[in-house]
Length: 412
Figure 1 (tube, one colour):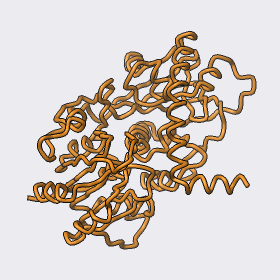
Figure 2 (cartoon, one colour; figure 1 turned 180 degrees about the vertical axis):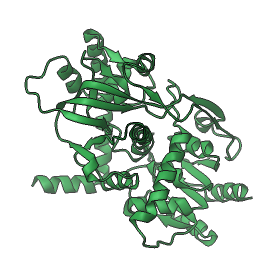
Figure 3 (cartoon, helix red, strand yellow; figure 1 turned 90 degrees about the vertical axis):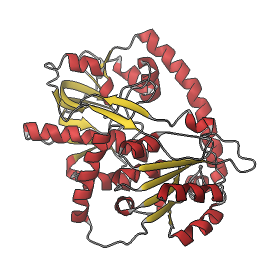
């Protein structure tokens, strides 16, 4: 009976959408209460600056170099709608030099484990990149159960983990964040291995999705290199902590282009060793979100009628393996897609034209990824279909003539 309810829940998009809206409301209220609790207990933390200041204590090693990234101009119909202009515009960001460090005799706690040092201080670099105040960041990204548990000594201590790195967090099930916030940390782990000759185990969640397993395999990590996290609390003799590859800016928090280039080179270099089967794709790619919960194109059939004569082929990324997605984007010359996590695969592209479609919600993630990698980028704002009230996940209607005009302009 329970399985029947679960299966019907997954199939019914209206119920899933309603559940998501209720969850968002509950989440906002719980965050307010959590922040109050953190102020009461006066939670102690170790920030990125604390690690850099005490580099000898943490055996901190910097690698690669700092970056100044320019996100340049872009193509869009004039005048630019304010909702797009407020989010996407030419800008520059500084990303500090990345590092990797060690934490001895740490304790890792939580279903998404985070690290506490022997004094009980939370190591913020094992949570998520910070874009706001510490209390707000912890409340949003660390469970209250984890924080409460850290205030008390554990009576039931399991055997130590010897040497490992935490490679899971509350965002890691999201395709975009897994790629740019989790996988890019492995450059630091690789540097650590080069310096010490030791390959740390990776602590990952117990139920990795197929695309997570495949991406790790493309980076040289097999099942024997992983610790599948099924505990809540463990001690660890030596925890290796690589830095997040973002600017720590309360407004932007942009990703490192250098880290994305490293990821691209590693994966494309290894992909031929895993699968020799030749797969043919169109070089003109239209990404369809027809199976997604939101940001779908309500008049997709009309859009494809106009694009097919130009050589475009629609692809539903949910129906493709991870390796197929990497190969699809690696050979693409033109990519048209609604805003969504599938555009993360732009990392593997080779100087294509990118045309992104926005509904009510405008995010700059892929605009800055494309412009940071010097791709030709354009975007089109699209109105909602009648009756659509959602903001972040609202569907859209594409003006076909506007789309074709913008595409023609970008291809010249």
